[in-house]
Image 1 (cartoon, rainbow, N blue to C red):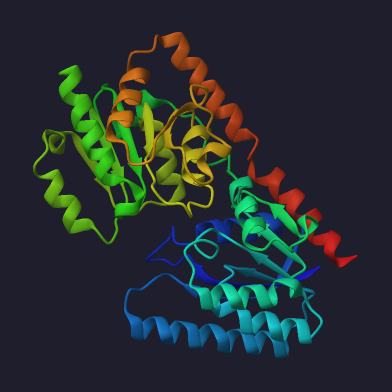
Image 2: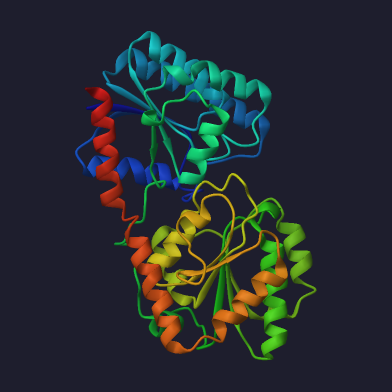
Length: 363
């Protein structure tokens, strides 16, 4: 089986985490002896509109060249957006098998025009990959005529347990010049819909309540950086924060292992799965996550951590406080539950099942 990979996002040296789940999926399928004969992708990201247009022109040129000069059986397209519709029409004319991987933003909050285009080409697709049961239900509600046999749930590449695994917290904290204090983390974009404001306010309230020093680790950058810095300057927790802007997956695994608790306060309805929560859990870190989108598909309240109401600072604070006050035995059980659940999403296992699904459409 030979595959042409098509994606409008893919990691670059400057943006190593951008679309990393697509890169991971490709590499995992290659380990399952799936051959990617060509790739048409946009590497890295830009906010410049002119550069975006140039990137899409290059993407289409690459796609047409690959269609003409490369022999492949399946086109594996990431993101069911406006850009992919002409490609789907051409691929169907050429009698190629088509797999489309929906990630969330390409299903929710789209324009009426894009929805109509999607509806027209949906019957031309052989397999639709979706990141969680939540999005499977959203897809069926949006396109009630779609056959469930065409839909496959695949958790965005799964978890690489050779990278994300429990490590010695004490030695890592020494390496990162951190003290043996209760440590909370936020790993996400600094965008308002990711819940950074709620995170800061909840940790500020928690610190004042316990009247003790804590440590906070924040990883990420985003479009609301200035707003973030302004708000942080007014809070006492600013003295307790260690910040990283861009990390590789290996570095990120170390950061997770520094934490006692990971907070995932997303407010996005199109949060595809929230793989970052599973990565933390794979390192043995309990998670406090928003009860929205794909998050509750793997995070069970009071088992691997706690679910909180979306955008509710008080609820986040109370769950941090609740975990902090658990006895050591209950904390250990929660950590073990987190690892056990994350192992269900182990990358090699889920990619093997995905390969079988690809093979099925070839028959």
